[in-house]
Every structure is written in C-alpha cells, then in structure tokens.
Image 1 (cartoon, rainbow, N blue to C red):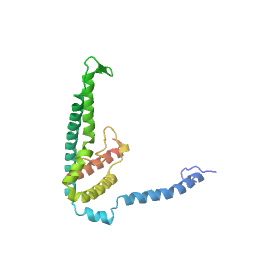
Image 2: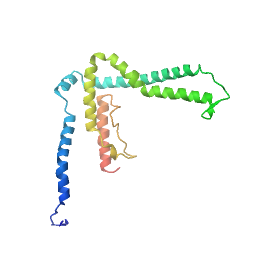
Image 3: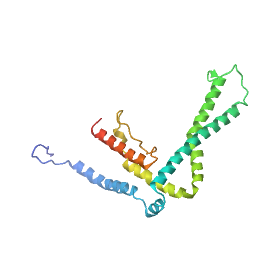
Image 4: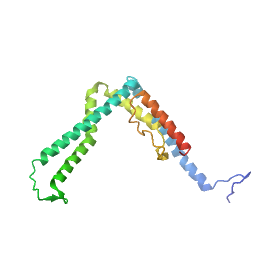
Length: 201
C-alpha cells in the first residue's frame, strides 16, 4: 500500500519506480563519464595543439571561411558556364514547351539550379582543398585544434530547445567566431540567452 505525501508524512516510493531508477543508474553513470571524457584531449592532441595559439587558429578559421565563400562563387560560375555551354548546343524549337513552360524559361531555370548546386558544394569541393593546399604544413595542427574547438563549443553552447522569437539561439555551432573578442562576445550572448530562458522572456 502506497502512502501519500503531505505535511509531516513520509513518502513511500512505488516499487516499480525504485526498480526503474536502479536499472537506469548504470546507464546514467556511463553517459556522464562519456560526456566528461568527450572534452578531455589526449596527451598527443594537447601536445600537437599547443604548437598553435588560439589567435592563430581563429585567424586561420576566418581565412577558411573566406576561401570557402570564394570557392562557392567559383563553383557556381563554373557549373553555370558548363550548363550554358551544353544547352547552347541543343537545338531549340520555339514552338515547343517543357513542363508547360517556354523552353528558354526552362533552360534558364536549369542553369540557375546548376549554379545553386555549385554554390552549395563549392566550399567542400573547391574551398577546403584550396585552404588545405595553402596551409599544408600546419594542417595536422589546425585539424587537431579544430577538433578541440568544436568540442569546447559543444560543451559551452546553450540549450536550443528553449529558444523563442524574442530569444534566438546565439550561433549554435560557433561558425561566426573569428577572434578572441568574437569568442568572448559569443560567451556573453550565451549567458544572455540562458538568463532570458530562465526568466521566460
């Protein structure tokens, strides 16, 4: 028989709740230990990352974003040029329609779509390889520093489930951080987000 809690009355927990807690406790301990280890760099990572300061890393990160943007533009122009070169050789009958639209309209739309695809894949196909080529001597250190940085961002970022129209998530992946001043501003934005979330603003 279960006792109901009131003032001065001891609560007796149901047996099935006690069994559930005993079953979940090992998994919770394992999850906590895994999360703790996630943000502890190995000695090899720490030694390799120490060869590059955070100022140098963030400057390279900004350079990577800029090269990625240039790669997007270059890939968009290349794909649009290739699509135009192909479609310009296709014989067009002005009296025909494609999907109920004028042939020229469809072709222009196809060229724009290929440009959009090239723009989206530009950083991965053009920007990142070019960045790695320019900084090939320090890429191992940079990648290690990048791993530690992303793990730190994952540890310090806010709970996105508590966002609202008046309280948007401040740069969840830290993509806009390009300097130590930007990082400190990101921390202040995260603290402000948590304060508003606590106050239900």
